[in-house]
Image (cartoon, rainbow, N blue to C red):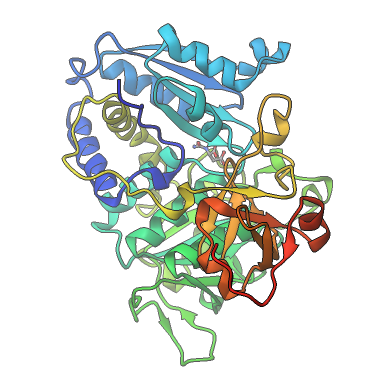
Amino acid sequence: MSAPRHLVSIDDLSLAEIQGLFRHAQAFAQDLRGWSHQCPGLISASLFYEPSTRTRLSFESAMLRLGGGVLSAAEMSSSSASKGESLADTVRVVGSSYADVIILRHSSEGAARLAAQYAPVPVINAGDGSHEHPTQTLCDLYTLWLECGKLEGLDIVLSGDLRYSRTIHSFVFALARFGANIVCVPHPGFEMPEYVVTRLRDEFGVEPVRADVSRLGDLASASDAVYLTPQKPHQLSLFTGEAGVRPELLKVDALYVTRPQTERYSKEEMARTGFVHLDKQRLAADPLRNAVVMHPLPRRDEISGDIDQDPRSVYFKQAGRGVPMRMAILAFLLGRIDMGTASAPADVRSHAVTVGSNPCPNPTCISRTEMRHVLPRYRLASRLPVRASCGYCDAAIAAPLVGCSTTLHFHEADSSLVRRIRPDHLVFFESAAQAQALGFRPAGQATELV
Ligand code: NCD
């Protein structure tokens, strides 16, 4: 039997596959009741360690509409997890004779990656902590594609809590790959995490530039907006301004609003106030004239009910599209539809590397929250500059020194010699003392073979 295909990160899909999913979702949406011949006899298991309404119910509706059955564990915290069972053991069992696909939501970053390592059936990440939420992103991209007719060159403003919103992280990676223009208008203190910006820069050639969003009025007044300039030349209509001057936002195709993810906040973060509140008056800002307003839901106070009837507000349509899109995702991963395209290419990040310091620096990474059961894993995040990240949650590993496991020599990470070390021989160190304690020596002048 071939290895199951998982959906842990939005990167697990090629752009052609994402477009294929749009087309299948569109066909399913034509007649939601006409597809029960797709997955008869197959069963999905929803393992939800965190609350959910839309994601779980739309997945279960999708599976039932495809003619399959569902096992629903909506409160996994009351399952054997409360007796100390590891996630690895749980998915091994559920993926044996119980279910043909696992839909997992978990509070720890990297949980879906771990589950995919152990489950004998496809694992779908329905949200892992503040890390990723790829199926929400597919619903979001599908909505943008239906509403705007394309993705490339769209001008998208992301507003609210960009730090902890997992929907945002999967979304920006996909938008960057599709060549959309991204303007981040975070609530102060809730800027995009460094590891996301680093990846955007290292892998997609996206550079963050401070932008002038004063035309958005008090929707953005407190925010230090950042424009992520893509590799490809962006539509010049988005900004005016000369080199060295803050580019000014002129028009927006979509405004994506997120709620404060208070369940992940520290005490200090809880005390912050003044989150954005989009209402009729703010939506009247000139650049938003033709912008669709999106939100993954649930909303709290960030979108006022007084714009629900505005034709630009598409958040309920966006949620409704979750069913046909998740029908497409399930049918694809269960091998019931053929995309007829090449799958996502293996990237540099598939290389495992060794890191001198353990554990992962992210305290809510699955490798920390299930420390008794999980060994840390690291991978190459980028070859040039050389960087490592956690193999579960993608947290960046601070490592100014890099060694070679065969010569046992170490170098400054930016030394040109590091480029000659084979990826599987790379060892990352926090300090010279750490490298030396592990038996490595500083590299001499000689350019030894590595
Ligand atoms: C999102 C989530 O769970 O991350 N909800 C969803 O899946 N539609 C967004 C949120 O909770 O804010």
